[in-house]
Amino acid sequence: MNQLDFYKNELQMDYFSDNYRKFESDFYRYSALDTPLTFLTDDIMLAMAKSAKNYFKLNKENAKDNRDHYFIFDIENLNDSKLTKKYVYQRTTSIRQKD
Image (tube, rainbow, N blue to C red):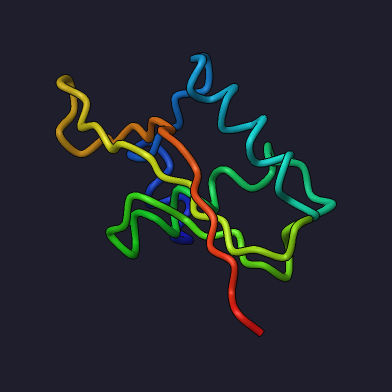
């Protein structure tokens, strides 16, 4: 069993919400990656869960504007399962590194 299978039912994105559509829009605005967001969301949630952080970073090497971008989420425990976490997108912020 790989780690993604272990977390398969415990990590959920708020896919059918306005928050997710905003996340999708913000991600594509800043990301220079060729991989569609749909193929990245499980890995993004797994990385946040393993690091116990409520954000992930799109590094400047993968950003259109050469800035680090932080995508920030609220993490909610679902009432019917204390183990299940739902990630609800809040906002993004960026940091420009001095060269």
